[in-house]
Length: 352
Image (cartoon, rainbow, N blue to C red):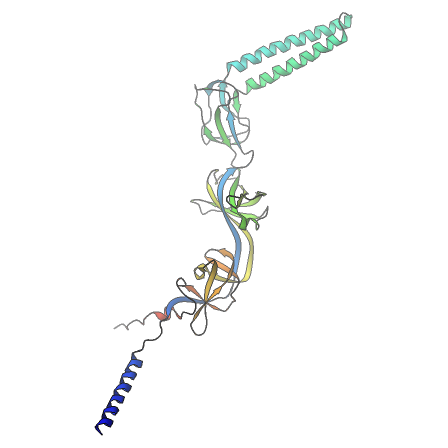
């Protein structure tokens, strides 16, 4: 009898302990994340390129001394607007002037000799061949004299283009050698953005496509068009040069400045668009976490299309209407249970 009572008491204790263990079992943890239902949206497909602004071909001129001489005057300064043909540097070059005078005198003498030979030919004193040779010599001498005169005139260095003075590299009284740089002029009414574009984006670009260009420190955008695309890709950088031409009538853009261009490729409506924060790199693939009715996050590989302003188009792998983890996805694993961030917050105590 005592043995039966002892067994009954032990059984009762075991049952009581088991019930307490079940009551103390903690619920399965859930990770708080941001969840959103994805709907169709509109996104603009564009390629972003970065480069530097430069003058167009023929839009800049670096003027050099035509001969050795002394700078007698520089009537312009940096930033000055100049017109085509305007005097920029006055150079005293005695050698040029002396050579021009000597050749002019020789040409005058050759022409006098040619006229005299023509008169002798009419009198029958000289031959036709002799007269023609003297005439040819006179023509050649005059051509040399004219060329020397033009070279001497180049000592007064004039601007070959309209624009503004970029650099002045000499001062009055300075002696310069032939070929020494004197001054640079840039025509900034039209500029080129020269950018290196990766091969992956290069195939999507075409000449004449529109681009919006902005520079560092300015929110103002300027409209340009793709002017040229290099025919080959650099094997070292896997990129090619693209030139975007930008009208700049107000000269708000400056050559040499860094600039960014957004080349618009198209606009798609009804696209499946998610925040960039929903994308996680797993291995070599872009992955998202889709939340189903059981609050379990399932990893899914997706293909991304256009990306713009913190948003990404999902070309394949996701449909509109599905629920996706849009924040807190980093660190998740397939099969984890999640709870929306708002539901995970503890309720606030009532205010007195």
